[in-house]
Length: 266
Image 1 (cartoon, rainbow, N blue to C red):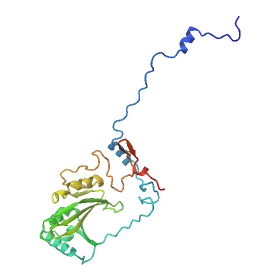
Image 2 (cartoon, helix red, strand yellow):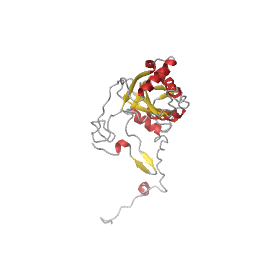
Image 3 (cartoon, rainbow, N blue to C red):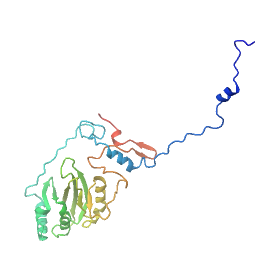
Image 4 (cartoon, rainbow, N blue to C red):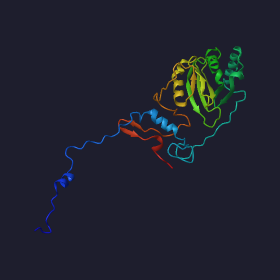
């Protein structure tokens, strides 16, 4: 006779079904990571595919001021030409350039859009198709003798329709101790400017950098490849329409957040 505390003994089938599996449990296979996931090309494509949001560098929403303090004021000068006389040696340079161009059968206004003398600096706005000829005259004419071009810089004016991209050249005459600036504009839809490597060979790397960061294509350059960014980088980072933020920087194990995630003044 069994009492109420008698334990129930499981049968062989019940015991066999409740036993834990014997031996080690095989590990669950994890999906292999995509080796291209963090490459600049892949991340760049994703970033450029996103809609561009015009905000400040540190999360500022109501102003394009990237300082975060709302103190930046952008004043755009109208497109004007300076009247004569320009002052200093500027008139002599303009006259000698006009004479040199006319000797080659090129009218001054056919090569130069306008001349601006401002704050002790002289800038010739050159029509892009005439850039190599004008630069050669500046270099070779004995009355000009601008032997050195210190490089080319790019500028992106997003709202300047039809003239969004500017290439700026600084010329130095060691013979006459003079300085002038050449500036060329090109529409964003046709970002081509003749290369000056044939006139000033030292511009080689400068034109590569301007192409790399602004996307200006210098026709005739012997090897227009990236020089700052990786070869597979997507986009041109110093353009105004380039999305802020992007890829965190990893350096010796430390991860630095993207610029738009470092601070926030909003």
